[in-house]
Image (cartoon, rainbow over all chains, first blue to last red; front, side, top):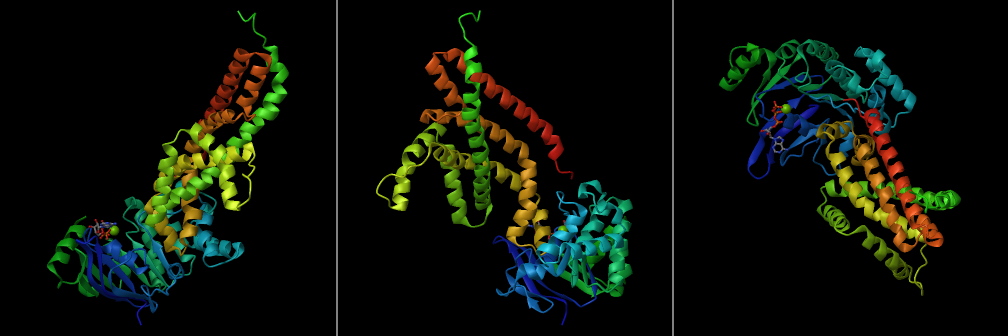
Length: 245
Length: 230
Ligand SMILES: Nc1ncnc2c1ncn2[C@@H]1O[C@H](COP(=O)(O)OP(=O)(O)OP(=O)(O)O)[C@@H](O)[C@H]1O
Ligand SMILES: [Mg+2]
C-alpha cells in the first residue's frame, strides 16, 4: 500500500475552471517524488489536496491507508502526521523560533514543554540553527527561516513531507543550504513529495518525476527515464526552459 | 482678566472630581473597551466565517450600531434594560439596573461594532499562508485562531485599538445625560452648585484634552515597539 495514493482527483474552482484533471499517482513509503511544471499548472493545488488543505470534488486520496474524504477522518490529526513546507516559509512571526517548533507538538501531540523543547533543540541543531533558537523569525535570513520551517514540520515526526517550491523565494546563495537539508532527509528515507524546479535536486535524490501541465499529470516516470531522451513535447519545452538558466 | 473668576473652586472640588468622577470614567472606559474588544472580535470572526447566517447576524448588528447616534443608544438602553430584564427574568417589576452597569453594557455593545471593524481588518491582514501553516501542523480552527491569527491581528491593530479607546474615553462623557457622576458629570454638578460654569467646564475640557493628548502620544511611542518583525 502506497503512503500517498492519489486516485483520479479532479478539482474545480467555480463551475468553469478545472484546476486538476483526473490526476492519478502514488508515492511509496521512502520514495521521493519531484513535481514540476509551468506556473499555474496545479502543482500547489495537488500537493495541498494531499493534506486536505484544499478540498476536491471527485476522486480519492488515501494517506497511509486513510481516506481523506471519509467523514469520520479526523483531518487535524491526519495533517499533524504530514509535514508541509511552504514557499514563503510561513513561520509564525510573533513567536520565537523555539515556540514555532513547540506550539503544535504541545497543542496537537500533547507533548510536555520539556519533551517538545528537547525535540526542538535537537532539530535546530540538525539544521544548523541551534544558536538562533531564541530569536524571532524576522531576525533570520530566508534560508535560515526555511530550515526552521523544515525543522518545525519534522518536530511532529511526520510519516511524509510535502514541499511546495521550498527554494523559489530564496536568494540564490541560500538555496543550497536548504536543499542540503532536504537531500539529507531524502537519504534518510523520508517519504517526500516535492514541488520544485531544482532539477539538480531531482537528479540527486528523486526516485520519480511528475510533470504537470494545465491541471493534468502529463508524465510520471522514474527519474532516469524522465531525464533521458524519450518524453512528451511539453515536458521537453519546459525542461529546456528551466535548464537554460 | 480673570478677576471675576474663582479658580479655587477647582482646587476645592478636586477629590470629588477625580475620586468620584474620573475613576468612574476610567473604569467605564477600560471595562467597555475590554468588553467591546472581546465582543467585537467575536463579531469579526462571525463575519469572516463561512457560515452565512452568523455572518448576516453580525453584519446586521454592526450596521445597526454604526447608524445610531450614541446618545440615543444610551438613552434607550437606560430606559429599556429594566423592562427587558423584567421580561427575561419574568419578575413583577422592572429590573433595577445600576447606572454603571447600564452604561457599561451600552458602551460595550456600541463599541463592539467599531472594534469588530478594526479586528476584521486586522484578521484579514494576516497572510492566508499563516492559517494554512497552522492547519498543516494539525491545529484546529480554534487553535489557529487563538494562537496564530488573533495574537498577530491584535498586535497589528493595537495602535488603532488604543486610538479608538481614546475616542471612547471622550465618548463616555455622554453618560452625563443620565446624570451619572462621571468626570464631566461631577464637574457639571460642582458648576451648577457653585455657579462656576466657565471655570469648571474650562477645567474639564483641559483635563480631557491633556489625558487624550498624552495617551495618543503614548500610543505613537508604543507603535514602534509592538510592531512584529517580519
Ligand atoms: N482560490 C483560487 N480560486 C481560483 N483559482 C485559483 C485559486 N487558487 C489557485 N487558482 C488557480 O489554479 C491554477 C493552479 O494554481 P496552482 O497554485 O496550483 O499552480 P502552480 O502549479 O502551483 O503554479 P506556481 O508555479 O505559480 O506556483 C492557477 O491558474 C491559479 O490561478
Ligand atoms: Mg505553486
